[in-house]
Amino acid sequence: MAELKVSVGIVSFSYGGNGGIRSEVPDVRDWMIDTIIKAKSDPRVASICHFDLADTPITMTRNRSVLMAREMKLDFLIMVDSDMQPDCEPDGKPFWDEAFNFAYNHYHKGPVVVAAPYCGPPPNENVYIFRWRTDRNDSANPDFRLSQWTREEAAMVDGIVPVAALPTGLILYDMRIFDMLEPEGMDSKPWFYYEYKDKYQSEKASTEDVTATRDMSLVGQELLGYNPVFCAFSSWAGHWKPCLVRKPRTIESDHVTGKFSEAIRRNRKGSERTVFFSATHGLGLPEGSSVAATPLHGVPPTVPGGGVLSERLNDQDLQALPKKPCCQEGHGEAHQVGSGCQGNNHADQ
View 1 (cartoon, rainbow, N blue to C red):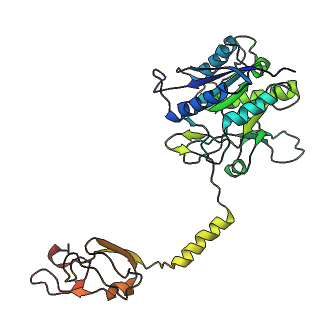
View 2: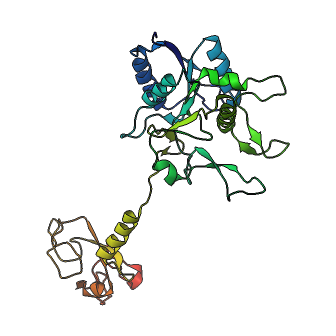
View 3: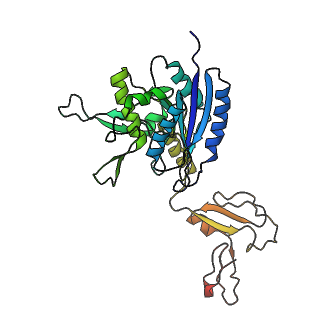
């Protein structure tokens, strides 16, 4: 059998402001350049192209990109959003390698969709991957629901895994998947659409990425006999929001134990506090001198002259600090080095 040659397209949604100007993080173009070079050298790829859509709403532009891909007679379409950093993990596998190899090798079995996992913005950084969950077995009232993977679940998985729904910030489609959800009329749903919680559409219930991939999963299971929606868990993408949100870092029991052990080794007491004082000024030493070792708790043996020394001192240590006569004439009370003189609002400098 002759080797299958396919055409690939990459569409980027490069929004800036309200969509009136194109803008995206440089990571998108860096990844795109590397991917196009790699694809051009792949004998399985007959052609590869790229096009931008910078308009709103995103539901419209995603639907438009599918129509444009059809006009170009593409076999595979990759969508990449303007706020992504593909292949963000140093120990991960390139998304193009994972997704294209899987979709290409599956082509004669039927269409698939493969997406990179990524997280939402702080403070929760939830994982945008979904699975079906229930609360009990054999319930008389169906209680299944679409639910996000936990951070811990997602961080522990590698390879390409079927899932219930996906984000579309970095995703590869076999174009035949859209044929199964072809809109039938003006009143039917397009491929990408929002769901809302009320008739006024004042609050989102689901975004276009979840509705599209969820529908592909359910319809694909019915028509194809398998779930065509897959997540490439070895190819995490970064998600630029206020900060770059990357793969979840989990806390394990040995990490927690280490934190407690470190706290015990530090042996810091509740009565200890940080005191700042000049290394030489006020000790009767010339500028540029050094402070010799003292019996004070934890004070370094030698500190270069000048500068500021800070250390945790308890109450007993503070009483042991050297005393000096007050520098204000007429105020004879000695006070500790580094503390403020309380006479006539005068303080050591």
